[in-house]
Image (cartoon, rainbow, N blue to C red; front, top):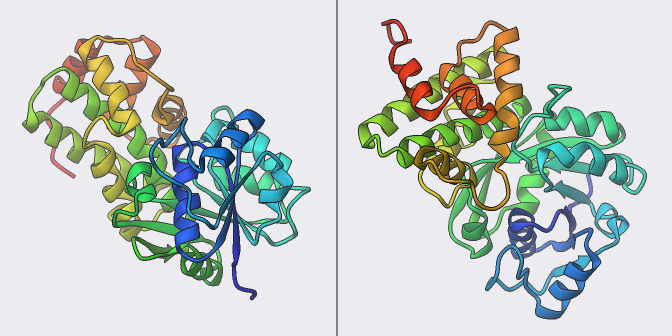
Length: 326
């Protein structure tokens, strides 16, 4: 198979910008796409993305474009838009990309309504593409700045996963390859919902003991859900499962944690809504339909939908019947 020399990055938010720099540092030519022509012109002039990652200059191998065809023509395409927008953008990419092009999901969520994971969405809209997913404990600012980071990249074909890891891995970004696509996707989606819960604990000032218990019991939920949907144990306990949950629950640099923190403090959330807010309901629906007990995730969904207050959700969790730890 031909080497991956060019990488298209579809989506010029903080994560897309960081991945463009990472791909360039790995020796690829990176083509970063944004729909907003004014933003593209500004990025080209400044050589940085002032909207998303101010102060981080683009590598010399990064080019920016408002033409989706330019990014779709790359040897591999990273789809870095919000999970609920992936179907529309994948549909636009499909006629522009060569058959067999790898389209890598970099979103962490599940599509509402269909209950489809994002690689399923890509496969439906771009059936000639090869799908993959990249996930793991990684703040965009760390990756963009070249700080040491490790993530997981999964594809159904081990050879494709290895090729993508070889192309994107650089001095500060280590990629582990996997064929457990579903497990990597579940870790990325579920941890966002659980990070909102961790933020609520922080915002309510419930203490470090409560936060540790919440993360541990939340991880038990993630494992139950993952096993029910065919994920491998080593994936759930690895970077894209436990690793990402630890990072995303660590503080307000995580958008999901910050949302929970605001809810816990009784304040209005600021900025863009976190992915976990869109994923909570579909995650809980899928769990309920499969008989999976996910009380922490259900509590987050109840708070987000207004069915429970924060205090009501805490009381309900603490009043659950005693049980053996499993």
